[in-house]
Amino acid sequence: MRGAPGAVAADRQVGPHVEVGGGSRVTPILGPAFVAAIAYVDPGNVATNLTAGATSGYLLVWVVVAASLVAILVQFQAAKLGMATGRSLPQLCRERFPRWGTRVLWLQAEVVVLATDLAEFVGAAIGMQLLFGMPVAASAVVTAGVSLLLLELRRKGRTRRFELMSAAALVLVGVGFAYDILSVGHQSAAGLATGLAPRLDGAGSLVLAMGIVGATVMPHAVYLHSALVQGRGLSTDTAWRQPALVRRALRLDCALALGAATVVNVSMIALGAGLGVATGGAWAGDLLAAHAELASTFGGAAALAFAVALLSSGVSSAGVGTLAGDVVMQGFLGRRVPVYVRRIVTMTPAVLALTLGLPLTSLLVASQVVISLGVPVALFLLVWFCRDRSLMGPLVNAQLTTRVAGAAGAVVAGLGCCLPLTVLV
Image 1 (cartoon, rainbow, N blue to C red):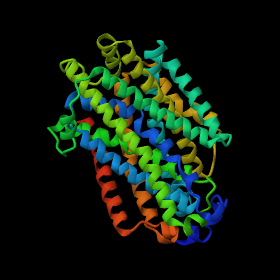
Image 2 (image 1 turned 45 degrees about the horizontal axis):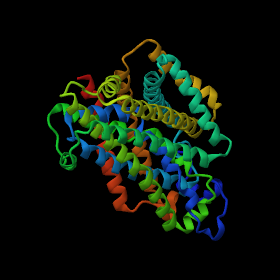
Image 3 (image 1 turned 45 degrees about the vertical axis):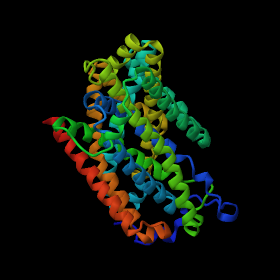
């Protein structure tokens, strides 16, 4: 391994070193979690949650809540790692692991980013097709252009605007689904409460549960969050001197952003359950069919809200995915490819798949299977580094936190590894 155990601790000023007045202002830290949260309401989540609601009612609400709690813990760890070290998770891997190991990690991370891009482009393509009647291949190109425009805000130092737009997209997705829930009706507060009790009902619900987990804990969001917290007017020295304030700010950021994403994901299940009841079980989760059902039965406004929510989910998460890809390459390899070149490369598989007319819902499911394979790697790396006191200093995980994070990561990783097998069977 390259780098002595205490190397990062000894030169932790390599990260952004801008002292904050009095060393106590940690509010600049707030915001990155809202960017990461977009990954938790992407089109893959829409597809899996709506299908779960349509086929199982409120049965799997507890899976969404449990996976979201794990996601909050994981994203908090990622943010704390970036704040304590001034480095992203991929950068730490490049410093501490052999070159061959770093290259392997980079390759699997790039595959995850490509699969994530596929899901996001498919969602945006469906949204544009529903709203404007645009061919899906053309919509993929438009999505790439819009995501690049969003990234220009951050590249030019307008980080706050980028974060505000991400938060606005999260709100827009939530409002769209909330409107449809009110329009469709057929909701049951008692059923929702019952869904919080952990239980399954046969192999079908088990597969759906694993799909929800695979769509919720996103590896690229872990890599990205560890980079987003850097350069926010707070030096790593200040973070080491005032760890309690840093922890408080990071917890607040993660709780607000990912808490909102949890509510949105639960609302997707509720909408799926309502549509399932309203159609007498005829609708089973297909996104195009959902839009058609909303338009014919509940009016154009409900269909419009659904299409806008799906489009917002796809476009905003595509921008986040592009940014994550940049962090992955720069971190693992120490190289940076121009963002426009990266976007052309990463959009190519999605455009080809859409141009060939492959089934859109099947593409979303396949993307989640591939993404699930990257979950164990990201979680293991995160827990491994956060337990190292020489690296994290006073922000190191407590033993209980390491055990809880490790156990949660093992469960999520196990389910993620089982998901491809269940799909193939």
